[in-house]
Length: 97
Image 1 (cartoon, one colour):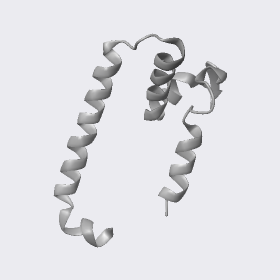
Image 2 (cartoon, one colour):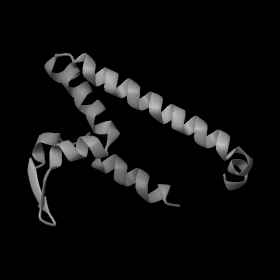
Image 3 (tube, one colour):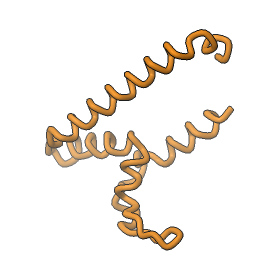
Image 4 (tube, helix red, strand yellow):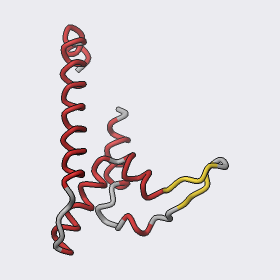
């Protein structure tokens, strides 16, 4: 039920149809100044991948190795957490699904 709302919102918040540069650099929220472009990259894991594909396909330059290292570490952490979660809740997981 919640995924029916989250997945379309995530799709439209990913910068596929717009460049991340159209967002303001600084935004004041409750008295705190946020770097909105950086916040969107942190909040949405697909945003950095989309911008990497744009850099490669549109402008022809490669991404640094640190991006791929961060992506691999994040993917490995999500894999380990998912495996741990499934093993820990395996008795009740099938009933919930």
